[in-house]
Length: 522
Image (cartoon, one colour):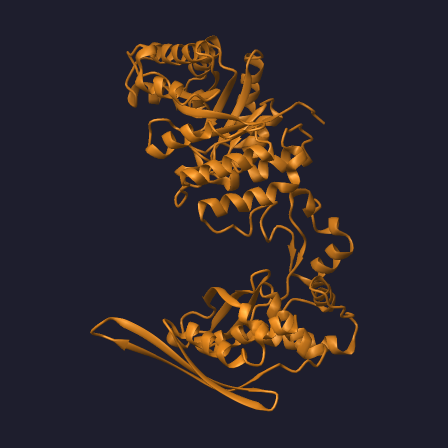
């Protein structure tokens, strides 16, 4: 086990924002910087000064943050060809950002030197050394990013190493090897990284990988195994094209599997919270299948898996989920057995012996419901309603007599109004109400609420927060089976319910009905 310290360099706020659909406001960038600092990231790359007003505003505002651990880095390029470094406007902007760390990138691959920035190999080396030396002289800690290092090394190894030597001569603290195109494989990357580590013992060696070949995490770990002691990446793998190396996978692998010392290791139990919070600030949905931190990372659906994992977690889980702030989940489907149902029921507060006489008929009911399109693995409230009906013979608090929903479109004004009429029985009473809304589901919700509130005032707090529709059977035109999921809340708790069928309004009614029944039972 290697106990050498590895530093985590987060570039979510710069490289991560280059990913499609990823954008942070200035306030969101500041909040994420604070969270990264609290988590224990060693470096936070804030952006590229001068590239856009948002990054400029961030560097101005971040000065007022009282970060406890992380160093903020400004990112930019070496001086231009033929320019004096002290007069280069980009270099001056890096200094104006007033960050303790400056990260600059330079060209490693001769193809880029001669065909992209169109200068000589000698001038490129001077650009690298001049820029690093000047920034160090101004009191900055400098990290040098060797862009396209691995492609450049495969093309001309001696020149690629000469670019690193230039940065080292200038006083760079870390030489970061970049797999900019994301196409490397583990053996070659490990081999080249090891050569750099051996050649530059006076500098730290970093790794910066992209995920174009699906290898970003594996390559980053391979580089550390070869001696690199700084890893660049982004939270949730945000980044250009298919993304950067994902720190939410790299960090726990380094700490829990490779035994490396990380300054963020004491906060590993907050990893999932950091991941979901980052998605929230970027306003993108969380990937449920994200390794380590995703909702499905420790979810068990097959009966054999669920049963074994519940008895001995390590039989189907590579770590304890709590180590990264996650949890074990038992999912329900037509593959579930009595043990899965029993375990899931226990999760939500019910003791259902898996060998009970009622369990066999309940499993049959569950399979029939799943076949019709109902999905209970992400609708715990509907599952609870089903349990109460079947095992406890709990009668519903209200029953439907009939409902009608119509939508009127006024062409002259463009106004669209939906009206729902609902007739319910509560005990021995029949109540008949009508309500309007901008859409049919909203009208149905309002009409149900209006009918039930006189009998059940507790429903006043229930609000519909989210509504999702999924097509289950394609190719049948307007007769396709749809599944509806509804998220409701009473202000302190929230719950999902489900409905399904060929009629979207009927499926919506079922999901709304279960939502109200769940609240009343609770």
